[in-house]
Amino acid sequence: MGKSYPNRTNARGIWKLSDITKNKITDGTYPDQGTNSRGLIHLSASGNDDKSVDAITIPTAGNATDFGDAPQGGRMASGLGSATRSFFAGGRTPSLLNRIDYIDSSATGNFSDFGDLTAAKRLAGACGNRIQGHLGGGNPSSNIIEKITYATIGNAVDFGDLVGATESFGSTQANSSTRGLFAGGGDSPNNSKIEFITFSSSGGGTNFGDLTDGRAQTGNVSSTTRAVFAGGTGASALIDTVQIGSLGNAVDFGDLTAVVQHPAGLCSLTRGVFNICQDSSVAIDFISIASAGNASDFGDATASGTQSTGSSNAHGGIDEFFPRPPELYSPTGKVVPRGAGAGQRLLAFGGYTDAYVKTIDTLTISTLGNMTNFGDSNELQQAGGGCSSSTRGVCINGSAPSSLSSMRYVQFASEGNAADFGDVSTYRRGDAGGSNETRGFIGGGYDGSNRINTIDYITIASLGNAADFGDMTVARTAYAAQASTTRGIFAGGRAPAYTNVIEYITIANTGDATDFGDLTTGTWMQEGNVTSATRGVFAGGYHSPGVYVNVIEYITLASTGDATDFGDLTEARSYTAAGSNSTRAVFGGGYKNPGTVTNVIDYITIASTGDAADFGDTTVAKFAMGHVANGHGGLN
Image (cartoon, rainbow, N blue to C red; front, side):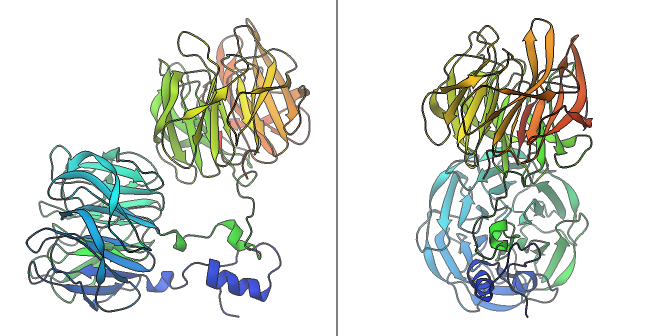
């Protein structure tokens, strides 16, 4: 039997022939992406009025062939692409253009009118995912970001603003399925900056980092995780790269085979291609996106194309080409659990050693071993709350050394630095949070003067400020928080005496917390808190002045009632970083009597009771880390 899509290597269940057919036709990936991903090059060989468009097959080196014509000539347009459509927007002839043209990228022929930009421009930055495309800045200098929706016909609409007005961005795509990048530009001091946008939000750009040098009109390509910026003004041959899911400055990747001001970038998930035609040259280069190094010869364009533009149907923003989600490996097409239990990563943000730190450390919950470095937070911090979906972790508040109101996030799948998420309603520290797959919550804390009882919530998949949820039954700080798929739990803390109160909220609603039961004793600075689908566990803490505890206790999340003894940690301590999958919980680091910091990591099996065992060590001895995990019991 021939190969169907998606590849069923990881398939679950018994398949019927009709299900396989449905999966291939309706739910699968595009089967030709691996061998026939196509790039289109809008040439400008004979000046401002040239309309020629070339086509290449990106995985196969060779010469370009004639594709057809764009309805308008021009140079310095911007290129966008979905899995099925290619777009060119703006440019000049020599007057500036505001027209958007499109075509079925699998065909050959001439382009058709799609709609108009919000303003005539050239050299706008371009990025997008499988659904929408974005153009930012451009000449004349602008801070406007606009959006088109690929599947419809119509004019571009406003999306938000760049950090600063910028002209002459790279006008081909650098993006993942969730984030798009704009790099370089012609306006000092913005000519080395990199900004990013998040496609799921309607908002402006955020600072990402800098190119290795200031330049404009780069050629951009991307895989699912890496963006590459090549060439640019000053007749540059430089190639830079960044990890899309993180923040930071670009690093050197290699060099093009020739210097070029405005190369057209085209790509598949693995290969980047640059039309480096300059003056009489017809050369095309290529790189392997995953491996740094100099470009190699790909073939030739049909004509020279100074300041040409590229569009491809297989770049890193098109998730039709990604490995399919697990529900598409089941015969019914129904969702297979992939959050609770399937996620194995714990992240520990910041913390305190002999000073505040901003490192993010990670471990794999299902194995034994030591923590390793994941990246850096964008804030020095300690004692911050956290919440997470199966794909994104958000660390909230903390102190550095004053109380913070900021939130920062990372994608679990890609190691790198944290980015800004938004702000909570008020700055605070000593708070804690929890979440289900879609909504995170944070409550209480200390604002520098008073303990507070406010509960905020966020939508994890989007960026933005927190909104009011309701109030806790008592204002408290340094408590434990956790969640099932439906309930959020707060336990213990200081209010101002050490409290044993457990309370709960219904995550999908908004409103005040309700009494759940009591811990076995009043405890604060606990924060070691984890869940399976049915059970919540609390570990360690500070019981009374000078007394740290090793007690582990648990509750049944779906009921109400008092906590029950589970066993003991290997060391009495407070302020551990904790995380879980469906079967195992880990507790790392902490502050212990007599005022020393530990690097010990313990683990337990959540469904049983008993004492904890040694797991490994944190990267350094520290405590009060913000902590998130992508397999906890609150996830679907």
